[in-house]
Structures are given as C-alpha cells and as structure tokens.
Length: 315
Image 1 (cartoon, rainbow, N blue to C red):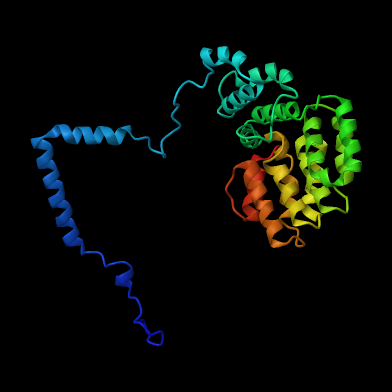
Image 2 (cartoon, rainbow, N blue to C red):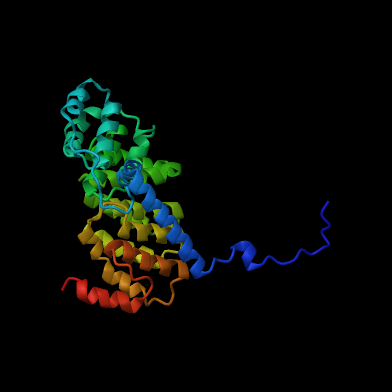
C-alpha cells in the first residue's frame, strides 16, 4: 500500500514529453526512410500508386464544398409523395428543403394546406427537422418550417386564430411562453401583424420575466422594421439577463429578420459599446451580435468596429 506521507519526486519535462532527437539524427532517419521508400516504389510501383489513389479518394474536410449528387428532387421522390402519409411528406420535404434541394420549398407550399390537423410536429423526426429548419441560413427554409408548424397545430392563418390565442393568453398564464411564440409565427405569416406587434410591445414591459422573454422572441419572429428599436432597448436595459440575451439573439441571428434589417441594428449596437452601465456578459453579447450580423471577426475592439462600419455602413 502506498504511503501517503511520502512525497514523490516531481515530474520532469522529459517524462511529460520526451526530448526530441537532435537535428542531425532526425535528418539521417528521415533520409534513410525516404531512400527505402524510393527503392520499394521502383521495385513494385503498383502498391504505392494504389495507396496514393486511396489517399486521394478520401474526402478532405478542408476542401471546397463537394456535392454528393444534384440538389434536386428526383422524379421518383415527387411521384412517391402522393402515396405517403402527410407526416412522411412533411418529413421528406422539410429534410430536402434544409439541404437546399430545388423544388422542395415549392412542394411544401403546394401541399401544406392539406396537412392541417394531420401532422405531429412535436414527434421526431419532424420535430427535430423543424428545430433545425428554424435556424437555417435560408429564410425561405425558416418560413417553410413556420408554415408546417401552423399546419401541425391546426391553426389556420386567420384573424380568428389570433383571437382564440389571445383569449388563451389572458386565461392560461402557464402556457404564455408557447402562446406568445405561436402568435409570433402567425404574425410572421401575415396574420394580424400590426395588431400582434402592439401585443408584444406591451408585454416586453410585463413584470413577469418569462412573458418578457417570449415577447422579444415574438418581435423577432414578426421581423418588422419597427421591432428593431424596442429589441435594442430590451437588450440594453431589461433587468433579466435571459431577456437581454434573447433580444440580442433576435436581432443578430434567430427569428425572421433579413440580413438588411439586421444591419439596421448595427448603429445601436455601436452605441452600446460605450455604455458603462452594461455588465460584462451583456457587453460581450454586443460584440457577438455585431460579429453575427456582419460576419466581421473584430473581437471586442470598439475602434475596429467603428472603423469597419465607417467603410461598410450604408451612407
């Protein structure tokens, strides 16, 4: 049994990483291996060529994008849609849309009206696909996921749907997070957008933190030009870190704002860099939001960001 009172000698650097052989010794070892390799290649070149061909066959992760096949729905897949259940149709087309297959989004638009009340959007794999799609780098894919979501919850794009959900919002505070989110989905798809913006603007000042958090999510889904300023204000001054972070995400990457709309938030973010009242976490989110919006990797250097904007900002 080891005596715990006995101190072991310290580990030396050589025990952690053995010393490298001298330069001269390494040179002669490499030279000898290379000479043997050349002799083998001259005597029997076929295995050497085969090994090199195998190396070239392996897809290198650092290479340019390499298509596996044409990004287009096959005629076989299109023909087979009619024999599939709505759930299978939605799963196939959502997966193809995420992978930018030509025609997939158009087929979702064509078929989604027939899927109302027939989808289980909280069941995998469709639930996972919708979660991936709402974060896609193509806003059309995000929009397709919202359309499928409304079909899954059997919520027609009508003022009546908004009325019912707003009544529930008053009566079912335990469901307020989901209700605010789904109202944002409806508003994004053109249903009572102005009315719902007023609802969200009222609730970003609610005493309840969860209500405020999902109000900023809702504004990000609405993605109206007039939503940008209140989101900046919530990012700057809300008492909850969760709400501040949610507002930053809505401005920078999540939700349904276009790239052009997100750029309109940059001047406000540049002003926030100088706000001495911001805590360290919120200040770091300012720089992260700037990076997400612009793609410029300038870290947390205010001068560099101002210089970048002076050259790239819209006059």
